[in-house]
Image 1 (cartoon, helix red, strand yellow):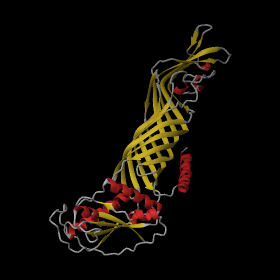
Image 2 (tube, helix red, strand yellow; image 1 turned 135 degrees about the vertical axis):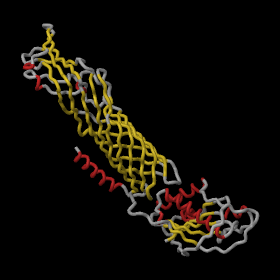
Image 3 (tube, rainbow, N blue to C red; image 1 turned 60 degrees about the vertical axis):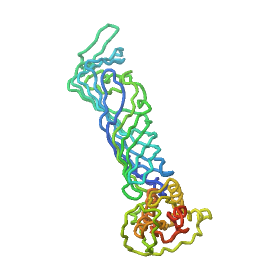
Image 4 (cartoon, rainbow, N blue to C red; image 1 turned 90 degrees about the vertical axis):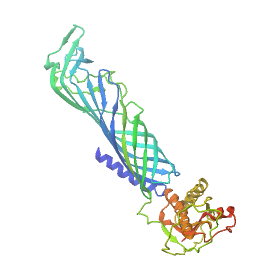
Length: 448
């Protein structure tokens, strides 16, 4: 059974290897545990879920920054424990060695049965994750799971088990005739296998998604699987023992699911904690840090009409680099026009993307996903309010805000080059507040 599971995992990995290939998807390895077993009613006793586990591999295709579709292959282990009320009589109809019909009766003391099931799981889940500018997000999954039983067994024991035969024609019950299959056994035990159908379950999972590195995430959450169908192929018609006409010691255990009209529907139920590692499909290596390029800006006169909101900070020019602009033969006219659009920061000292700026950044992320060979120069600009050091700091923070937003959309940081322009390159004279608002911006350029 374990060999079958790993063979299935290998085949699934090969399948995913041919189907995956975009940055908007991820592979995952998961493991979880909690109470996991067979849920059913036992009027003449009690049933209880026991600890179980789930493990598997998955593949998620993301259609945007919030929604994705997940499938995969897993292995689930389910176990339950059943006990019976002492001296409860279970009966079925049988025929003895002389072809006489009788009622076969079985009762026990201290009866306990452990039930085990291994099942392959094939989930189809819709995943949602909250938008976030930090390394932590909330996520939720919901969908269905197909369960394929690969192994199911039971082990029983009892302090005492008694088998008797009631013959209605003569109104007599034989209770102690071991040579003909009737009598009492102490410290009794038995085992056997169950035969179950495919299972269909509703599945849900929710928790937190932690960013480990670009494209790689740790999911930690709670899960629940609830079976929709009855696993029993047919209703039982036996007692707890098979009747053996020549020796009671040759009788075999049948398990509580073989009892006639006793347990009703048997469904899967599991809930607990699950951990999952998600690995971006194109993450070949750890991306290098974002390149920051500082450009010296001349000291400009400070107008007294408005004061900067940032503290004065001395910035040391560490590198000066000119990044050539790439040819745009591969871009459409609309894309060339779009890439020239600036992301605006209307307030003095503001370094947080506004909703409209986020919308432009979303389009920019889609543009970069369409053109995986293109790299961008992200230039931060300010108006002339404030000193050179302040403006240098604000402009680099604005450029970083755009770059970080794109990273969270799955863009490799090595494709993003940050440049701080300060107030050196206004697009309009800083003679009015309306003009200064236009100069507080981030400019995007395609580079080689």
